[in-house]
Length: 373
Image (tube, rainbow, N blue to C red; front, side, top):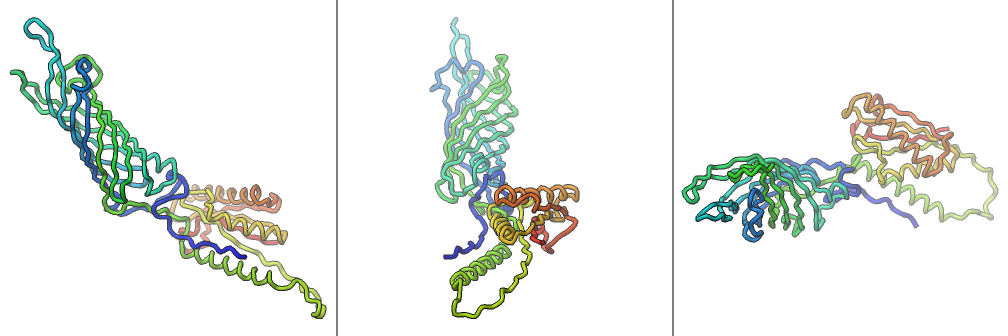
């Protein structure tokens, strides 16, 4: 039985390696945008508010956000949240001190950096049901002036630091349901009361929907041209078919006249290992070429010359020279440690970008293995 090499297709919507180790194709300017709508509860934490019951301090508000994912694990967004908030002050009247509730409204606009750690530390998959996305940002909060009981509370403005976590639940390719918690730091006098604290704070929890715009998935960048890779696989399949056909022939032919054995000359084999941009890590889909070269060299007792290269259009000459060395040594290490080629039958060279074996720039991110007596 023969095993056919698979045709390689672009990986769209998923990656095999962790997102941090994967190169993704850059999407268009109109892709991977999102709009978020939500609402929930918040609690203002400042000054004498802690003396009021938690239920009395609860506020309801809304959120609106607009942002873009620049790869599967990094995004920026502009978010506006706000609504009413209850503030509590001690006031004196009729010989007693009372905790009095004052009602205000506020709005907070901020720019957040979002980091999807489930796509960064684990393989990217567009169809993940649950993701975990911490975020951090800075912005501006505003509370308009208001007259309460004959006293005018002037408007308040404050820079803000916003920290939190969003947990999206995938409903479809276009819509997520999300749960988000946020911690907002404001200056100490945002409620126009100064008690000597370092800051006032708002803690909020919101539930809402993310609506995705444009293209929603990402394509993994492969280290070489798909057509070339498929053509090489077709050649491998043809060779395997020939081997299968030869294996069916009889080992001996008693009725045939004896003939003098033919001395066959052993041809050299050249094989290539292609690499990703700025990488010396051997991809799984390239290790078959190393295995074929090692088997051929052991069968015919041939040495292997390993030559590393780098493409000329990226990186400096000095950097590419070192990169080609790391690539060559990585392949030589695989031949020696995994496939048992002795070190005395291995020679290593590296050319950097001084020599370009192929006219297509991307193909020159490679190591060539040459068996030659």
